[in-house]
Length: 367
Image 1 (cartoon, rainbow, N blue to C red):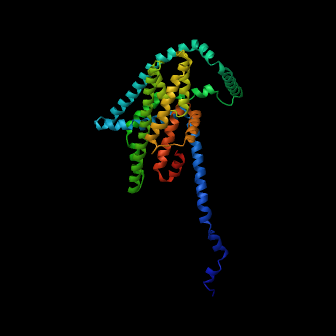
Image 2 (image 1 turned 90 degrees about the horizontal axis):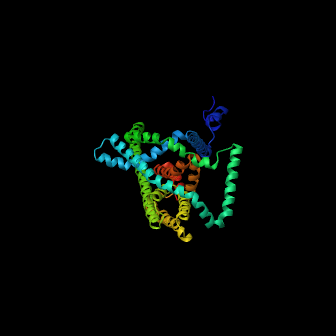
Image 3 (image 1 turned 30 degrees about the horizontal axis):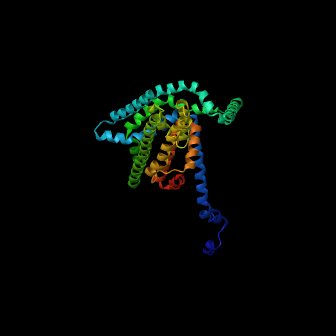
């Protein structure tokens, strides 16, 4: 008879094949994390490809979600007045539509008048800015060659087409955005209830509710704060332009309000517009620089002092990532993409800060 202890002292070939090597602690987690990282990257690439090719559908949905988060405090206020959700949503959407129409009507007349001034003011601007003629001609030649090369090669759209891309998508999907926004507002907490029903344990259900409320409150607070600050910049800019003799405070206030939604790039465009307007309407050269200077001062006070004080504790973002996000989403969706770039980046950071496994990514996005 054979000794049974031999089975433990000298393993056979079959037992050796059945026993895996003791390397799980060294390679198992690393391999698993690497696979998860690769799958996550592939998922992100697939989502971005869908967002690019289906921009006509995706852009109104994203805009409706952002507007829903912005209007959530208003919905709660109307619900406290015992208004039905459908009526409250209809009132808010009607107010948004009326505001857009009113601002557009108020800005269209002065904008047309300034456009009529442009041909006769070109000669005066060329006389004043003669020392910049050579750099301007060089830039124009470069842009013309760039557009011609892109058109001849057939490899991509021209710069003007890239500028108008997305803006057309937004205009064509405006009513689609309002329709989606209406149903998002009246749906209330429907999606949250469905998520709670899916989660098995009571502890996880409570965690989902707390996390959802935290994310919604933080995102709403961010969007409302940014909107109020942009409105303050618009009012201050309109008053400053009226005081320095440029006139049309509603036009310039609306322009400043809209441009302030696009950090860094928007103020640069604003300085150029106010410099152009000053050259067209004010005779004295140094006095014509005053509108652009006042706008720059207002932007510096708001962007470097007031807004950081209000948002620094919760919503600081890495400026390099802000620039990259602006460039990427402008390429993806045009002007609406540039407007939505920073809110989407802020929403991503807030979501990452609220979900523990994503906290390192939220820390990476922090300024």
